[in-house]
Length: 140
Image (cartoon, rainbow, N blue to C red; front, side, top):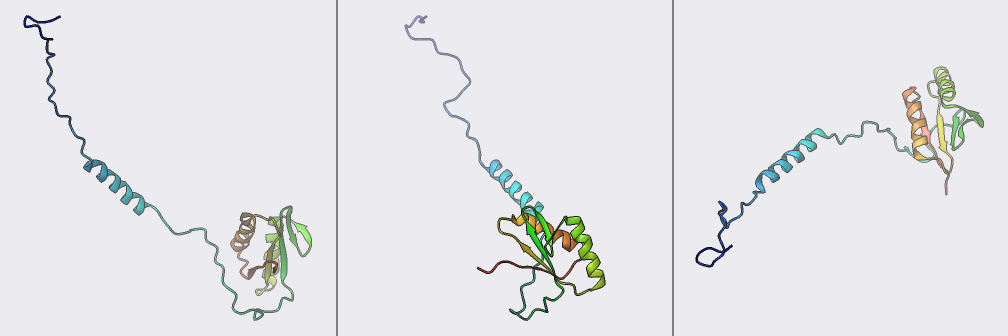
């Protein structure tokens, strides 16, 4: 409908021609606080690290006579050529280490064995206080 003057009626509104702007300052403050929180709450230490000592000199290590040879294979573990489970392996090595405190244990992962499986074996040997453990590999 048109008014008496022939123009369209105006809608009454409380809005002005300006839009309210959103300030980015509170958003930046929140992001900064979250960043600081996660930086302080995070720990960058590897709490399950396995200590590996580098070899002193090639050929300078002690005699290999009497060393226990453990093969980590995809199908299981072998101790001196005999198939064995991990608990039995740990028990046998602990018994041998009790008799000889300088007992050497050589651990050799076979080709295709996952790194995690080898680390699990090394971790169990370390937890059983078998100290003189060497990780060996094939020369290529």
